[in-house]
Structures are given as structure tokens and as C-alpha cells.
Amino acid sequence: MPEKRYLMTPGPTPVPPEVLAALAEPVIHHRGRDFKEIYERCLARLRQVYRTENDVLLFTSSGSGAFESAVSNLVSPGDRILVLSAGNFGERWAAMTKAYGADVVHARLEWGETPDTDDLRTALAEAGDIRVVYLVHSETSTGVVADVQSLAVTAKEAGAVVVVDAVSSLGAVPLETDAWGIDVVVSGSQKALMCPPGLAFVSVSSDALAAAASAVSPRYAFDWERTRAAQAISKIVMAVSRHPARIAIGSVAEVPLRAHRAEAALEGGDVEGAIAAVADDIRPIDDVRSTAAYRRAVTQNVLRGLLDAFARG
Image 1: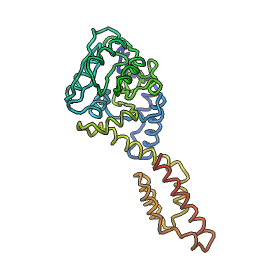
Image 2 (image 1 turned 60 degrees about the horizontal axis):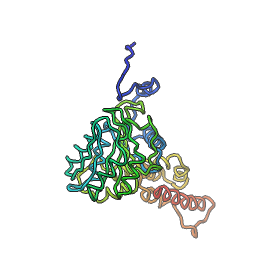
Image 3 (image 1 turned 180 degrees about the vertical axis):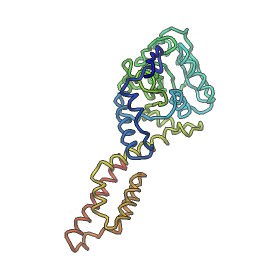
Image 4 (image 1 turned 135 degrees about the vertical axis):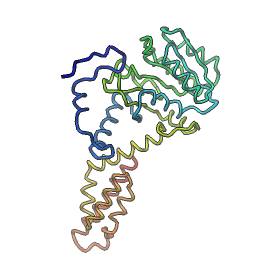
């Protein structure tokens, strides 16, 4: 029996036994249906933890990956941004945005101070037009928790996108992403969520996505739109796999190979491909000469409606 070890650090934190037990289960393929069910369930629960109706994007990285995504997707070289810092992780926002060529206005407080709205309002007034404001909720290096609710209001009044580092605060102290008007919240798995290191999360509002659409900094693995598209496909596939749409395919297709092709198209999120695969099995309503044929025609119409609804939502 391995010796029990206690981690007396802000993160990684001790992992509950049931989580460790789950890690001991056999590896499943990350493109298989079993994984996709877990994936979709985690994404839904992350939205609950974040207290948001917006997308929460999941990356296989440390929290720094979520940090970098909030810079590469929002900042173009020359953009003026503001960092309000009072510790190491505020300094990291400043260093990272500088690396992407931003015109950084760094409102630097003494380590251990608590940033307040007066600090931010003064910095914004002196800086002029600011595209993004970067804040830290819980500054791990000092233990200070900032009032990001008030700070976010001040930043939004200036017309800026608000980004919050919640790596050590999400799940530990109250954080109301939507109610407080925070556009982007970055976090990680290894602190208050009590999971092993290696996963990073970022919630993105519609304002953040609109700003990202005009940013020109290069990104690939941390590209928000690419990740959103991949997660959306997973959502469609899992919804369809749990829905009577699969039964509908079986009812429509007269040839097993065509049913297989239709299901394969669904696995890839290809709605039109799924319908096309069984198109030869559908008779127009006015050509129906039997109850079975009529049933297939009606089922096809239901199937198209279901799949189109999944594609939209």
C-alpha cells in the first residue's frame, strides 16, 4: 500500500479517492462513444460550476493554456489592453500580453494589496481606449481575493472585454460569471475542483467571441472557434446517439450498408450526409403503395427534422 501523502499547496490539491479510482479504470478511446458521453456530461457540468449559459471550452493543458487562449484569441499586435495586478499571476497576464505584441497598460499595485474599483477607474481614465481588461480573482501568490464583480462593472462601463483568472478561485469562492457580466473566465482542474492537473477551461461570452473574430494573432490548439466547433459536433453526435433518430435510420434504411453509412455520417456530425445515405430508401409520399413504405416516408421526414434541429442547436 503506497504511503498517504498530503499536499499542503494551493494546487495541485489532494484528489478524492473516488477520483483516483476512476483514473485506475481502463483507458477508453477519445473518439469513441463512451468517451463522448463523458465529455458532453463534463461540459454541461462545467457550465453549472461556472454559473454560465455560455460555452465553456476545455483544453488539455495546464491553466496557463487557458491563459494563453484568452490572449491569443483577443489580442492583436498593437492593441491597447490593461492589466490590473497585485501579485505573480497579474504579472503573468502582463508578460503574456506583451509576448503577443499588445500595447500593455500595466496598473501594478504592491503585492498583497487588494485591487479596487478606484484603482481600475483611475487606470482606465489615464489609458484611454482599452480593448481588454485582465483581472485576477484569487491571487495565489498572496492569498488576496479581489472583488471582480465590481471590477467587471467598471471595466464594462469603459467598453472593454473583461477577462478573469479564476484558476484558484473557481469552486472555492463565489463566482457568478453571467450575473457579474464577466466575458472570459479561465481556470484549471488541479485546484478547488480537486482533480489531477492537465485540464484547462475557459468560458466565453458573445462579446468575447465577437472580439475574437477580429483578432489576428496566430492560434491553433487554443483557437476558440475551432474548439467550439469540435465541442458542438460532439454535442450533436451524443444527442443523436441518445435520440430516436438512430431508430429512425434503422426504420428507413432497407439496406444495412446504407444504415451503417448514415450512422457513420452522424458520428462525424454530417447531418446532410446522414440523410443522403438513406435517400435511396425513401419513396415520395404520392408514390407510396404500402403501409410500410408510407411509414418509411414519414419516418424520413421526422428524421430530417430531428437532425436539422440538432444542427441548429
